[in-house]
Amino acid sequence: MLSKKLLQIVPSATFAMKAKAQELIRQGKKIVSLTIGECDLPMPKHVSSAALAAIQAGHHNYTDSGGLYELKQAIINKFKRDNNIDYTVNQVMAATGGKQALYNIFQAILNPGDEVILPEPFWVSYIEQIHLADGVPVVINTIPNNFKLTAELVKQAITPKTKAVVLNSPSNPTGVIVDDQELKKIAELAVKHNFYVISDEVYEFLYFTEKKPLSIASFGKEIFDLTLTVNAISKSFSMTGWRLGFVGGSAEIIKLMDNLQSQSTSNPNIIAQYAAIAALNGDLKCVYEMRDVFKVRRDFIKSKLATIPNIEVAPMEGAFYAFINVGKYFNNQIKSSFDFCLKLLGEVGLGLTPGGAFGPSCDQYVRMSYAADIDVLEEGILRLKKFLKN
Ligand code: PMP
Ligand code: GLU
Image: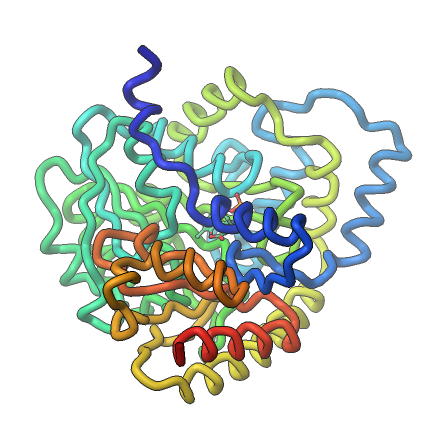
């Protein structure tokens, strides 16, 4: 008998849908893949130059498992500059992507039966990572509240077993941002009931609201002590394949995470670390230029989707996803978001990700990643319209 725990884990739907689309592309089919969420724009030149320089300088050794001292300094500077959070060197570490940072966190804070409040729709990996750490996800549905997480919703889910809440703002898959006043109230709840806040801020620069969303750890000493702020160079610098994420939090938790990493993967790739130093210490002009491109795409997709009858779209405030309710198009053959996406891919060659992967209440939805060129997006919309007409 193989591991009972792993036999229960479902593969990441985002990767699965990308793989399905890729397979058809390999067969020569003309597929529009708006599946996985990753930026198509090139990574910044000064960052790739720094990586090349690191190779040429001959950097080839292990580093501290939590990352180079210089990288930790760059992470500290970044958190101070962009998020108004003051971490010290033993309160930060790097990992192989934001995903590993999150995995380490759940492993470090959870004991069997501990509850983690998970606002739905949620990014696919949180729930499985909580299961892997023997935690119990307590899903709270934000859909009836137009996808907006409120402190009241969090409050209703608190029990004596609550260990943490996961925040992801701007959100994957909805693009919705938690309002600052609600964030403040959630911070008060966490302090009052003494639970951790895992604040996943990987889409921090992809906001289309007037003002940049705040980081919950910046609200004061008490919430700072309870917050784990997760980020990565993946989305902000268009470097998903480089696998470099990082986290700030209490020294006690960071130490446990570092211990785990030292016994599992060791340090993230050293060249990716040098690239991250350049990215995090460098000017943010390139990041805001990418955001401007995404804003144009967001406006384009939003206006196109508005012309399609009988669908509803979550408020597109940030990240690069449209979360679309297509439930009115379900029929005898299409009974779930998974059926919908498979048929859509098979019949018109458009790849989207089934909403059902983002939570039990999301099965009428599909997620469209608009991290693609306008021409590709236009073709994607045409194919979606064609499919819905049939
Ligand atoms: N959090 C969210 C909300 C994400 O969408 C992703 C996906 N990339 C991650 C974390 C993980 O990012 P990384 O690629 O750095 O592992
Ligand atoms: N976060 C992206 C997505 O949701 C990348 C894939 C993943 O890490 O799941 O598509």
